[in-house]
Image (cartoon, rainbow, N blue to C red; front, side, top):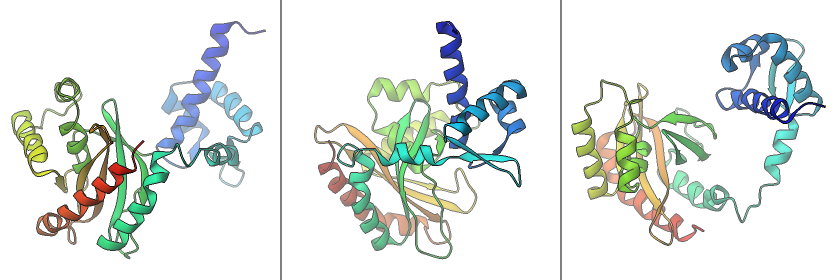
Amino acid sequence: MEDGKSTVRAVDRALDILLCFTHRTDWAMTEIAEHVGLHKSTVHRMLATLEEKGFIERDRSTDRYHLGLRVWELSANLSGSDDQAMIWLPEMVRLRDQLGETVSIYVRDGSERIRIQAVQSNQPVRRVAPVGVRLPLYAGASSKVLIAYSEESVRQSIVDSPEWPDSIDMDLYNQTLLEVTSQGYATSFEERESGAAALSAPIFDRSGKLSAALSISGPSSRLTLKTMKEYAPVMIESAKRMGTMSK
């Protein structure tokens, strides 16, 4: 029998392999080994076990791996009443239909933001927003919202983080955060990705605490700064409605 440390280490490694699929949908075994820093033989054994249990599937034609159906079985058992992202979904669809752009919900996790729900735009040219994607906090409209409306101690620890790029003028960024809290929304224009723009507003729970950031994103040719300013009151009202649905 394996000792406790060996067992925990094996679980830790298996979870690291599964978490690779939060970055993209398919991987070669050698790519996974390089990404998680394990020997290929170890990764091969782990993948074989995960495949046997249905958490991983291997495409025999390409010899690449993707998530298996067992993952979707687990996610299907999330309680709709407890999953806040599901509760907000109808309002997100309504907002998408009203503004015509991709709608996303972000929450902060340490120095990153995670997209926990998304409704894709129906327009031919659109921003595709995969759920589960992690993005850095130093760029983007939703990042500004998640930082600006955090508790002061949390906000200060984030902006003081050494992980921030040296190219960011922190005095200017702190001024931007003040503007966000003053106007009630944030914008980004080709900050993280060329040709993309976003508008974001805070969602507060019933106690007034920040729950998440509601965002719309699309091509910068369509989501101009003028257009986003016109959309801002709609976003703020939608975020308020979602706040009344918060647990």
